[in-house]
Each structure stands twice: as C-alpha cells, then as structure tokens.
Image 1 (cartoon, rainbow, N blue to C red):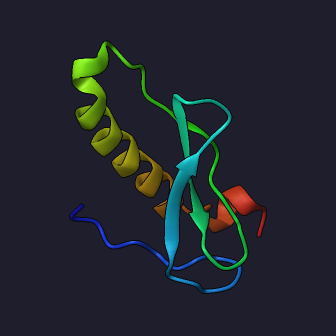
Image 2 (image 1 turned 45 degrees about the vertical axis):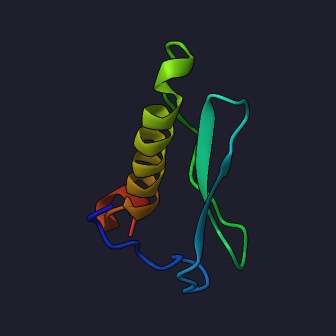
Length: 77
C-alpha cells in the first residue's frame, strides 16, 4: 500500500490491524492498542478465483477509511 497509515486519533498507536467486520464480506481497520475501529467496509465477492484480489482491495479500502478524519466543521468544533 502506498499510503502511510495515520496513528490512532484516540491513543496515538500506529499498530493498525485489519479484521473481520459484521460478516465475512466486511472488514474493519482496528487500533492494536485501544480497539478503536472504522465502520465496516464491504466488497462484493464474485467467485473463488477473485479471493486474493478481493482481500487486497478490501485491505486498501479499510486503511483508507482508517485514514479518514473528520474536519473541524464536521465534528462541530
């Protein structure tokens, strides 16, 4: 992945893990220290032949979600 992972906005940890979300088709990025996590990211699976590609794509999407931060306007500050 070319993008640098941002530290956890709550504890500053840089150990970010990709784990299962609410079902097998969903993943979340989760802080390895305080367990803060993103919302679920879903990628549709089309056949077994696409599993490796699907895992790469969903990891990248989960990390992009992790790196998304609320702006001051969005957070009400």
